[in-house]
Image (tube, rainbow, N blue to C red):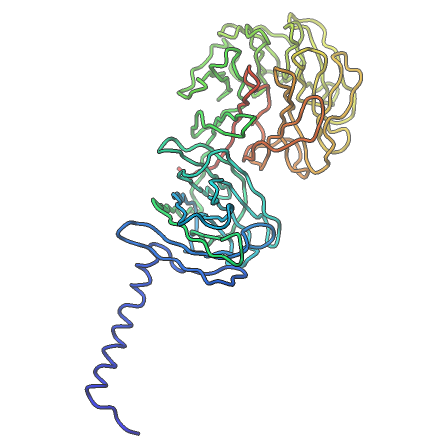
Length: 501
């Protein structure tokens, strides 16, 4: 074998060493804080990912038919992480593009498989912002849209198993888009993604102001409940965060002048401006174990509250809406208030008598109660329409909790919702008599516990198919009581997260 000349050997060694010295650092610099760039799924046109340290921008070019249905195809710039995270970004598309629904995403995936479970926030080419998720491998993809349009800063957060998406316009506060609980075992693949929405095309997006904060949860750390008070414009689905704190509060009522919301917290009643601010305690005298069944009379003069603590359990009281010493209405318990008659003369409520929960009515001035339902199982969540002709309630008499209605005397009981895939609770007729909003759990959920994936659904009061207007992590306390704005354009509700201290 011929030995290469010394000069050639030196040059070869030099080139080899340079390659060793530059390959990994160059790759790391080009990919910023991420580890690898990968085409996921069926890709005809290879994608690419680069990072510009001078501008702090990531540039991703991706092909792929879509990120939807049962499998995805996209360019993925990723790293592996465990624990909680907060991921924010701005997106700018390069060129006009060929598909309005090309997608640029911040995404958390279980694997690099095309059909992996995942959660993302997707900014589409036409400005649509959507929370998208696949619950199980090979399952369908679902989406939660927001009326907030790009350009906007979007945020994807993971707190334990709860994923939350929010968006900010023009540097303003982040407003909720949606949330859900989905268990993705650690470590997960976290990163940026681009899909062309057309297998024959490639699309390019610039990601700027990208921040990825990560905190690995320790098994000894206890999570704290965080509650968010939100309002939602029914016509558009736009959600606005009114107040958030690391404690539990529940069940917002809307004041009759439209300026304040009323919540229960730690046994007391509190008011808070609809525009935001700190809650102010409402004086309720010696009654200080209020639960989430409370609400204002139609004329706004009186507040019905339910409070436990005695041997009877929860009992119903009436107090002036400006505060004062409550007056006991139901000496027998447990009794949980749910509705006022429009004339302010009658209360309707859920009560357990002789081992069964049914709907009862009682004069607001006090007197004998009247049983309105007699079906086996739980009847709950009773509320008058604004004209006083019907009472809506939820009943499990068919085996799955559904919405029913009846006349004020208990006659003509009939079902309103019949979809066996949902357990429907707490129906609230709008003040203008046009709409009905209620909270829906998965049919497998027993009762109405907190910390569940739920939807708020809306349907015409005259009848029709319900539609989802919000998806959130909530349940008990979310919308237990009347929570329409007086002009029937908005509702108020609470949602939850469990965060590390």
